[in-house]
Amino acid sequence: MSLPPDRLLIIDDDPMQLELVQRGLARDGFDVRGVTTVAELAIVAAEFAPAIVLIDVNLPDASGARAIEVAREAAPGAHVVLYSAWEESRLRVLAADLGADGYLSKSESVVAIGRRLRELQRGW
Image (cartoon, rainbow, N blue to C red):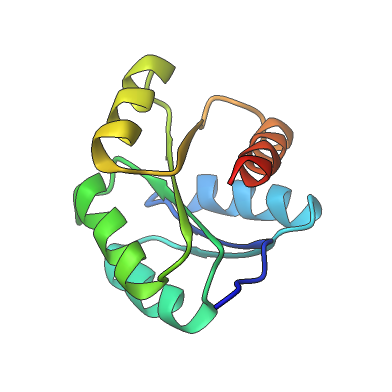
């Protein structure tokens, strides 16, 4: 099944950060949905069928590994990208360890996050 390439689901437990990133990526042409819990992730991913799932690695209700597992079960074929304010080298290692398709730093501007997502898309 081919997924719409710009359909993006974000999970972030910080509602303000989530709203900021959602708005910025929507302006960048992504069809964006956002959730704040892993339970919501499972439901929305199954209904929305995103091509990309952007996962905050510091969630209070599940580990990053569990969030990736839920995303892959609910949205087969979606690319999973970790998203955190962690130091880049630490985030890169975690993404590799958990089998994520990429990683992004929350410390970048929303414009840079959109640009980086586009770069990742070209590489898949």
